[in-house]
Structures are given as C-alpha cells and as structure tokens.
Amino acid sequence: MKAPLKTTGIDHVVLHVKDLARAKKFYVDFLGMEVEHERSWQLFLKCGAQGVALFEADDGADIHGGSEMNHMALRLKSGEYAKIKALLEERGIEVTGRRGDPHCVYFSDPDGHRLQLLMPGEE
Image 1 (cartoon, helix red, strand yellow):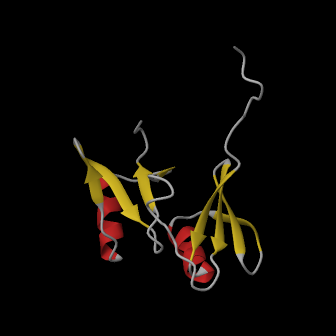
Image 2 (cartoon, helix red, strand yellow):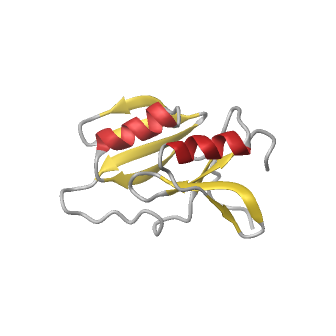
Image 3 (cartoon, helix red, strand yellow):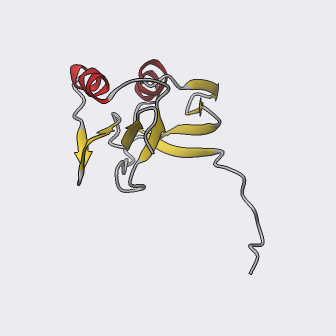
C-alpha cells in the first residue's frame, strides 16, 4: 500500500524552555546554530538543513525535558570524543555514554532536553 503523503524532511523540532535568552545563548553561542527568526517568546534556529524551534513556556509551566522525546542527535562538523567531552565538562555539563558505547556523547541542555553529539564519521 502506498502512503497517502510523502514527507521530504524534518522542518523543525520544538523544545519548550523556561528562559529563552539562556536557551539562545546555549544553542547559538555554544552549539553554533544560526538564528533564522525570532520573537519575544520563540526562536527558530537552523542546524544545517533542519530547524530547531525554542518556545518559552508560560510562567509556572512545567518543562518535560527528557520525557517528551528520548534525545536529539546533532552531527558535529569537526571534533573528537576526548576533546568534545572535556569541553562540555569544563562548562559543568555532565556527559554520559550509552550501554555498550561509552564513547557516545550524551548531555542535557539547561532545560533537561537530552542531546547527543555525533563526531565526523560516526553513524
């Protein structure tokens, strides 16, 4: 049976954040994403051909980082495991691996969303 629709890619993924300015600093200044456009309560970023949107949660709203999705994997242009791990840890970010692959780089953004960094050449 042929699918009635055909998707061609992921336009963007939305993450809710408590502090949009803090999240912008993390995703733009640290992870190197580019601002596509922004408003006072939302920020659309480009990550290669894909997009990540950060929406500031209403005051008092819960953020469910780590439970809305398992993780978002980001491919790095360059870098090697030991240096990337050290860079994250220097900034006070806890890095974990995964079962059977201790050299995998998993960490959380300031709102608890799990991220993974893939080094060049990794599948």
